[in-house]
Figure 1 (tube, one colour):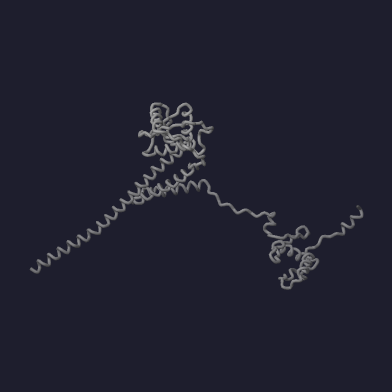
Figure 2: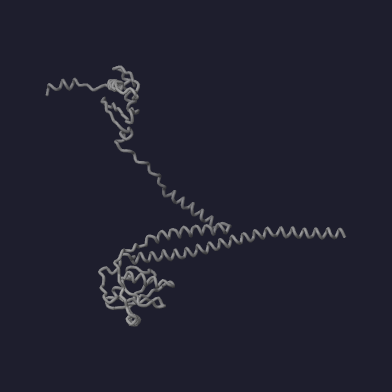
Length: 337
């Protein structure tokens, strides 16, 4: 161990000036004459400290490119370290800086922006021009209509591919008998404002557990909507429609070989809460569309009114000029006589 100490002491670190000279000589000895050769970088003497500092700063801040590769020399601590690649990424630990995020709005700026929008809307609502007021209401109603349509798209349930259902063929006598028995019985399933959802089909199967026939009472129901309900319930419950009454009552028959399914509520139906939300959006959309039609009619009437008054204002000076011409003719005729 003692013999290794003198050898270790004899080892000296390379001076930066010597490193630069060796690098310059190696570049000058390149065999390819057509390749771009850099000019001599620095001429330093062995004891020139200022030249060493200049070399350090130049090599650290200015990477040398040969071809398409950037070579950076770092001489901190008296040792020469080369790095190949992008100098910016090497200095940051090999990681690129993420892009700067957009400046978020403060709460106060958001409140001020909302106040500005409200003030702008208030000015339009209190405008002396009726056309400005009507157009503002119309734009607002159309925006609401688009928003409601987007909301209703979320409640569209895709239909699940079902096995082919072969409905039973009933004779006229069987239909008449089932119709009379269904009218006499008091068991029924209500279909309200939520429409057809999973709970309605579940109640139908529970009724069919003890009764062959059952009634479905639709209330409230628009004209013709009862037929849509009958078709949808027949598809979901695999029952047979016996009769549709004028008071929006449907009589269903479960079938001769009825077997209660394990899952009585079909998966491609809405829940009770979502069905109510869908109904509310549909009602709002219906009223909004009616309001839009009303506003469009008002705007059209107002434009007709404006055109009518413009024509009337143009006609009044023409009448006055005609009267003046008649008076002038009368005066000239009296003078000639």
